Structures are given as C-alpha cells and as structure tokens.
Image (tube, rainbow, N blue to C red; front, top):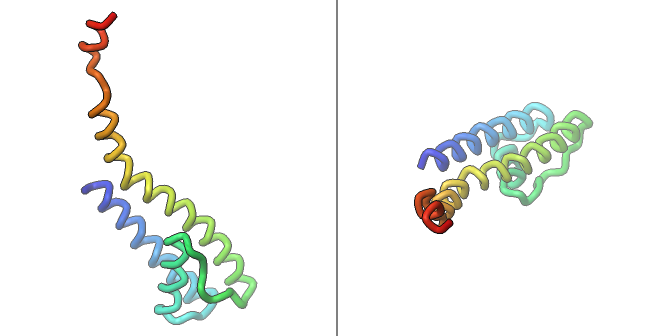
Length: 100
C-alpha cells in the first residue's frame, strides 16, 4: 500500500508539473495540458504538437522525464510483489546450511 501511495503521489506531482508547463510554454488550457501530460505519463505521446520553441523544448524534456517516471512507478508498484515471490521460493539460511 505504501509503494502504491508513493507511486500515486509521484504521478500527481508529475501531472501537475506537466499541466503547468504546457499552460506556461504553450498557453494551453488546463484541460489540454492535463490531456497532454497524462498521455505522456501513460507512455502514449502528446496530443497537441508544440508550436513555440520553448514549448518544444519543454515537451521534449517532459517526454524524457515522463518515460523515467513510468519506469520508476512500475518498479515501485511491482517491487513488493517480486519481493514476496522471492521470499516464497527462497530457502532459509538454516535449511541451506543443513544441505551442505
């Protein structure tokens, strides 16, 4: 649950940052900024092509950031599951010592 909450917090902060960037650099309404940011964070790509040079730079950097956030969030969510599986199939130190 904690890992999921941290992932959601990271998603929310990243979404707000993307919306602010699109509003500032591209003068997009918050709904369009939300759509572009959400699509990038979901791994799909932007909907509106940037028109200004500053907007193009922001969109490129935000796309790189969104890709990393996608990978980090997947790691945060699936790490506890893999950890549990490793414990389930891993022998204790005492059992390994007895097999030698």
